[in-house]
Amino acid sequence: METKDMISILAVIAVAVAIVNLSITLTKVSDFKKAITGFAASEIGYVNITILSDVNIQLTNSTVDWGRGVVLVNDSYYNATLTTNEDGDATVVGGNWSITNAHGVHIENIGSVNVSLNASTDKTAITMFGSTSSTNQSYQWKFTNQETNACTGSSISLATFQNVNTSTTLICGEFGAGPLVDELYLDIRLAVPFDFDTSKAGTAQTAKLSLNATAT
Amino acid sequence: MVSEKVVVALIIIAIILSVVSIAVTVSTVNTKLIPKVQPLQGNTEDSDNAKVSIIIDKLPESG
Figure 1 (tube, chains in turn brown, yellow):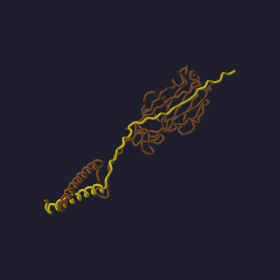
Figure 2: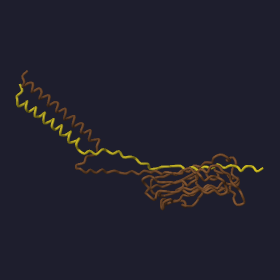
Figure 3: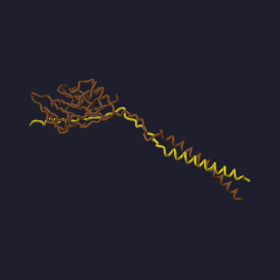
Figure 4: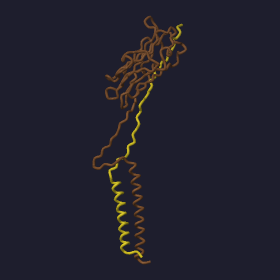
């Protein structure tokens, strides 16, 4: 084989390899471009992002535990009244329950958007205490703005004790998400009747209070 | 027999194709690429529970 023929064969091989090389490169570049959104034509690039809403409420001091106690009946009291007081000390009148673990529940909207806030309970005063006379008993809640205007559009009166509701109750039509408008207190008041259902004596009576937030 | 002109032409073509291939690769990889951002889906609803607990004892029977 002459040298010139050898060069010719090599040249043909070189062209073939180059064609394969180019086709593979183009194919891979095409695949690569599908994985990216674009490229910056200069030193400064811009990215558009959308911040999606995130609903998140957080409760602290979420357990109001009065512990064990008795109703101390006298001429003035036919029940014992146990009341939480936001972050302050709770009060017990007509009974000897402990206030150590009884504080107002702290509700905070830690999400990124305003929400509507609903509440309900699984028990009422009747199911908690079962007073034989059906009097002198109550189970109440009170929602109070910890931060001014945190909660607006409520279906109940804020900062006022009212009987709890086992049905869903609109607490805030708008519960803020921004700083200084996103915190509430939930206080609890129990009136334990002297004539409570004795079958409940000595065992923990526990009520669950559910809070539900939905983006507005 | 292949003429020398044909051989030269083939080699030139091979060189050009290789140069084009390298240019495409380098220009693509060296571009400031912006990665695709996977958006996170936020919650539209949240719930939490509080608990109220009490134990009621009977007054001891007076003797």
